[in-house]
Amino acid sequence: MTELPLVAAALIFVAAYAWPILDPGLSQTWRELCEVLIVAVWVVFAADYVTRLYLAPDRWRFVRENLLDLLIVVLPMLRPLQLVRLLTVVSLLHRHMSVSLRGNVLIYTAGITVIMLLMASLSVLRAEQDAPGANITTLTDAFWWSLVTVSTVGYGDLYPVTGTGRLIASFLFVMGIGLLGVITGTLSTWFVQQVEDDSDKREQKADAHTQEQLRELTEQVRALRAQLGRTAEAAEPVPPDRPEPAP
Image (tube, rainbow, N blue to C red; front, top):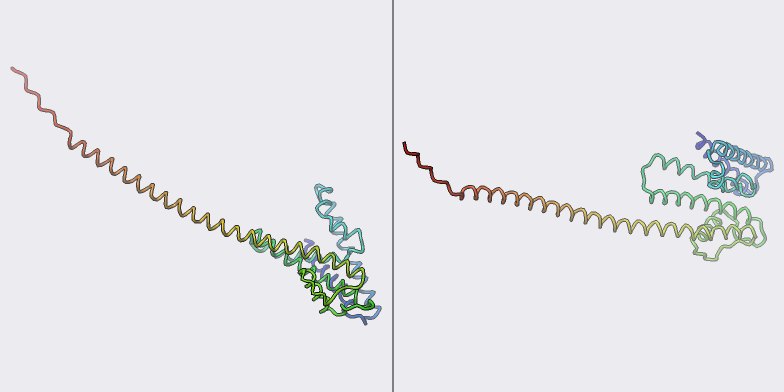
């Protein structure tokens, strides 16, 4: 019941977080409105976390399995991580599609990548656009830098000059290596599974052929037995008639 409202709240958060960054000349009134919306979204997600914690049968297990949600609620500096809630959209799509585990991994990986690039681009632009000597001053530059960084290419044409920007870059380094590992592992699993499937199909065909041959041999043995039985009956000598007793 809460998935769609949380998705809407996450989209509102994206708009409120991105608007002041993309429009540096935004009036103070609108900036304050954006801050109010960000705080309101934080309250919504905090209420959602508390409610789920209250309803959880095992609360300690719930806390352990939802540490990111807890950090988002407890640490205001991590409020931008509420964008992770956009993965709820991917979850909703998954419920209406029948896909394999490998397909799930690819879907979630793609969703995480897009959200991570969007958040990193906005965050680094917010940190860099007014810094002295900054070279990341537009959204296109920020997105290009995020894409190059997360892919571990690192051309060096754009780079952060602030501490916050470098912290974001460190985060992208780690996530990029992890994403490459996930993609590589998924493709490797797919190739191995294809080989195993082909091998299983060949074995099934061979087993089916063997079973067919066994059935044919069984029928031939039965026919030979029947023929041998008839031949034996035909070759059996007929006993002579007994002489009639004397009167």
